[in-house]
Image 1 (cartoon, protein in one colour):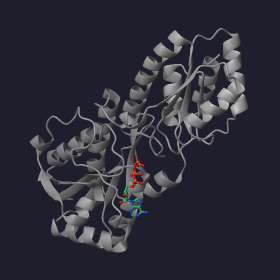
Image 2 (cartoon, helix red, strand yellow):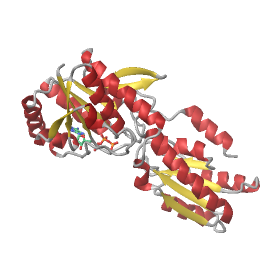
Image 3 (cartoon, protein in one colour):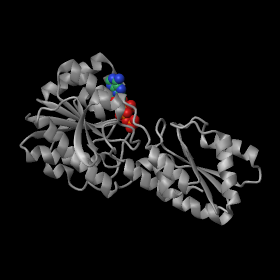
Image 4 (cartoon, protein in one colour):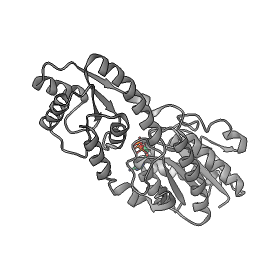
Length: 323
Ligand code: ATP
C-alpha cells in the first residue's frame, strides 16, 4: 500500500476530525501518501481530493464536524456513480480507501470494494453507537455529554416549577443516547425504540414517583420511539394526569456538534491508527472497532447486519435508580 484515500460520509459526528488526523499522521509515519477526499463519496465521483500532509491536520483534533465535509451521495448508490468513483480512484493512484461514517457509508464501501476489488476499511463515526463490532462509535460519548448537560439544565427549571419534562434526544432506530443520558441525567423513565413500553406503564412510574415525593421529573424520549414524538407522548400523559405541568424539549442537532470529549478523541485516534495498520497488514472489507478496550477488525457485512442490543444491565440499573 503506497497511497490511501480518506473520506467522511453520512451524518457528521464529533471526533471525525480526530480520526482523519490519525489516519493522515499514521499513514505518513509509515511512509504512505494520503489523500483527503471532500464531501464523502461525491468527492470520489467528482475527483474532489488533494494530498494531505502532517501539518494539513494541525488544530483539528478539538473541532467538531469534519473538515473534509460530509455528504449523502445519491450517485454512489448507482453502478455508474461507483464506476466514476473507481476511475478517479485509479487516476489518482490510490491503493486503498478509509471510510469514516455509519452503516450506510459502510454498505457503500462494501459494495465498492466487492465491485472493484479495492481494499477498504471502515471507521465507525456516528453519534448513534448502533454498529456491531465495536463497544463505542466515535461521537457517541460527546453526544451523550451534550444531552446530559442539557438535561441537567432542564432539571433545574423542572424542579423549580415542579414540572414534568419530556426531553427528546437523537436516535431514530437506537436508544443508546437515550439510555446513557437517562442514567447520567437521572431520568425517571426513558422511552426507546428497542422496548415496548406503554403509556400506562409510564403513568404508573410517574405516579409512584409522585407518591415518593419525587422533586422533579425528566423523561427521556428517543426520537424514533414507538409511542410517537415527545409531543404526542406528552399529550397522552396529560390526558391521564391533567394536573401535571408538562413541557417538551427537543434537543435536535445540537447533539451532533461541539468539541469532542477526551474519550472520543482517544477512540478516534486509536481507530485511525488501527485503520492504517490494518491496511498494511492486508485487512480489507472490515470495520475497525474497540471491544473490551482492544482494537478489533470485524467484517463490514457483519457490523452492519447484526443489530447491536442495548445493554440489559444498564436498563436494569436505570430502573432501580429511578424510584
Ligand atoms: P448516519 O446514519 O450516522 O447518518 P450513515 O453512514 O449511515 O451515517 P447514510 O446516509 O445512510 O449515512 O449513508 C451515507 C452514504 O453512503 C449515502 O449517501 C450513500 O452515498 C452511501 N450508501 C448508503 N447505502 C448505500 C448502498 N446501498 N449502496 C451504495 N452506497 C450507499
